[in-house]
Length: 414
Ligand code: HGY
Ligand code: MN
Ligand code: MN
Image (spheres, helix red, strand yellow):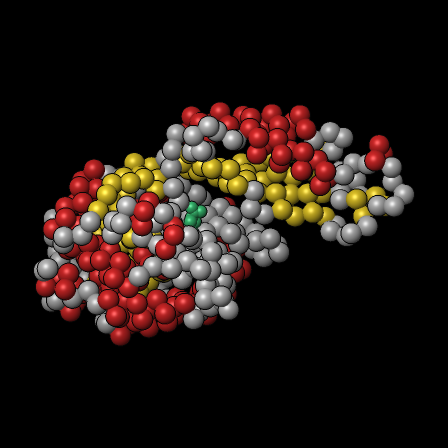
């Protein structure tokens, strides 16, 4: 193993995960560190403190992406960037996103400890609001950075309690201050690599350590709203009711039916439902639910979107209903040069590896529109993620980081 790969320290990397897992830690051993929450601010401060202790510079941008920079011999050269996200699901795991940020930081430390000079600066990044569970859409910070979403639109987004993202961001940057990069988010990059747990069972089932990620499936998100009429639960006959939840359940049942495909490739999830006024003895006047739909082919997503729209139009009566598309991210193919480099470095390190697509969305799907990008997966226990029992091993996390640092060192000297 090279001195550089050897400089990756499994114990240090594992301890940093344990330290970060305390920030928003839940009784079941997971994390609730939602975007732009006090827990998110605490994680930002922790990363900044570790960065400062190593002499790396930090900066942030107008959507709150946090950058940790290790200088290269040519400070004007386009940097190589690696990272992921520190925000989590409400009942999330301690590795989803955080691994990619800490692997990138560990790579900077390994470069430093091994005394490796790179021509290009190498930057670790924590993207703002990848999960999109508090504020929609997800992968927000990376999408604004890549010019996919307008900054002002994102600042105007509201969470489920009506809190504006701009206000939560101001509070977070106030609690976790960092030098602000002027202007719109975004700067020229040479390459981007993201390390992440697989969030599925394929690597573990294949007893394989490294996933050489070839791309990310397409994803679309929607909000469905049904509008009826609030009425007394005891006195209002069924025939006179405009029950918004009854309409929502008719629509949802038809959608589950319409998205059941023979080869179980299409992913359809209703993850959040709200009923108003939410009183046991008042017929609901309004219901809202989210849709998350994914498939490797955009044409399949497009054809199913038409089915969803037809169902909303045809099943709502006697209520009204509407469906709004919140995001549509086309399938991403990563750059073959990056895919090949990840595969070569995994092989050179003697690590078992396999090419595979990503079922989960990642910030890399947006950054791949800016520069050649790729991802490195490591296994997670039983493929479970978006669950507090999410788990990984110190050895696998370190193995993925060794591949990452070798890839970064090669790209930063090209
Ligand atoms: O939803 C996703 O695919 C990602 O894990 N946030
Ligand atoms: Mn993630
Ligand atoms: Mn996630």
